[in-house]
Image (cartoon, rainbow over all chains, first blue to last red; front, side):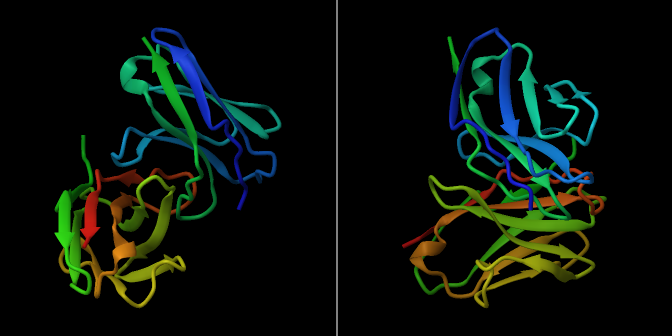
Length: 108
Length: 115
């Protein structure tokens, strides 16, 4: 399975854009990049996913580099409720394998 | 918005007892999963289930675990004889079709404490 590398933690000021990086240099052509988050001990929450093109939804934007070796999740206007662990996952097949993620702290 | 629901939200059981965790996946979904998260650790894959049989299971999913879809709506995880190390949050998940481009949705979890 392709693996991802994320910083263990990041801070972002409330109201600013939070940009969470992810490296996935061994990704294959048919593997999707998924982002989930986990607030405290709640269930993982789906945020967004993409294959090659940049994607945007009501929660976030996903920017994937042209070589697909890295991506960035953007939360455009971070709030205190966005404090969570964010997981970047390269998905192969049916299941999702979680890494350690990035713990995002939103600072008031 | 459709969601995966799980019961109970929290269960305390004595070591050696059997436990059944219940899940109601999103109604039109066909693929089902169980994951677990020991306190302070990563979310770990346990098992995937499709068409009334296990599709894949991890090393964690040993003979003391079993899954079942007893009717058209429920999906259960049974732990036959619980151990202290089974204490964890158990998450059920579902998706409407397989393949890496399809989204898996998670429930809020069942917290199991084995004493």
